[in-house]
Image (cartoon, rainbow over all chains, first blue to last red; front, side):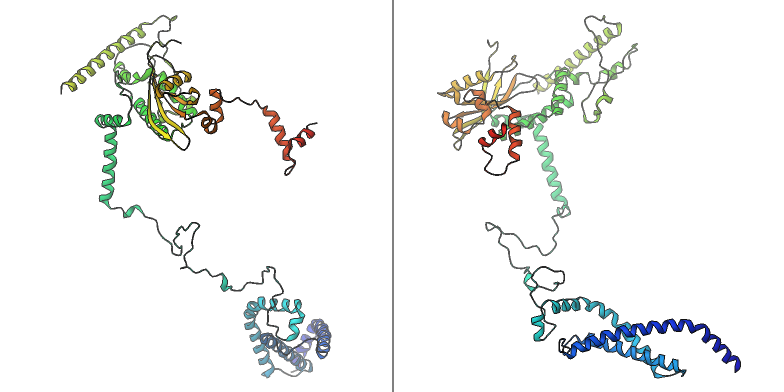
Length: 359
Length: 135
């Protein structure tokens, strides 16, 4: 027994300074609260603040806090006097109230906005408040403040009411997401029919009979062009494009401005032997077999999309037969080959054309 | 200028534009062996072709030679009278035909004037004000 008493005494001596500081704090807090409460009670007694109707939630909260404080005080009293607190209902009370306060906290947060508005209203319009309800929102504040977030039924737009566009244009109401007409809806047959039409159009464009008909309609003068050798593919394409463009321009009675690239293309086309480029397309394949010395490996320059690259792709030009430079043996041989090829192809073409005429 | 070869004129897409009181068409000129046909020559030919009293009412423009030469295509307009022509034609074409003169505006002066006017607001941007500022 004496040991126990000694231990408790040592404990008491250790905790003594801490206890003292805590008690001091408590006393100070209590003094502050006391002074504030006294001031408020004086005012209430003078009928400056009406406490008849207020927010019941806040009232309940106040009561809870009060009882909590009372219980704490009683608890400390008992402890100070040295009475035991085991199993005393005070402890249970404390725990309960603490629990309630914890549970109230989220509600508190939610109501915070409303309470703020009310307090603002209370400060702003004392005349209305004097009449009674603090809960009445006063509309003296007309400017936009962020506390005016409440549902406004006037802003509702009816979905089904049709809106008349300017000039009586009907615009369908947009309230459900709609999908566009997708290509999957086009059946296979329809797709094939479309393709057939496209192919037919393409073929008819190249058909000479149809072209004759069209030129008759268009009221153009008849043109007979001499085609020597096979026209190179790029030239035919270029001409076709130009013709299409000119047709469009005549339709619209305007001219599209020529870009720098187009000018370059035209220059290239005119310079490259006036359309006879296709004649020597197969030339180098034939000449490769011949054992010629110092043959420069230059292919024909094609102005196609693949060959773009500016200065990188510039190939050296074959300069043969400049007046001052004497022709070399190889150049002579090459020229002979060219002539042979030319006559050969020409004769071939003549034979074929005659065949067509006969048929 | 002597034509070594014949020049053939042909008009296509002929349309009478009542709104602008004129006739408009596309012109095809065939001039094998020649580089280009001048606009004045074309105007004479058109005047004879369409029996136009006043050759000043004919305007030809936007001529382009086809690939390979020998043929060119352009547009032509014939107005009913000179007043309509002066009313509807753009300035540069009138100047080409000799119906108007080009006003030689010094570009620099114009820009300076504009910059001066930027500083004033409203109706005060009159010439008097500008002249005064010029000093």
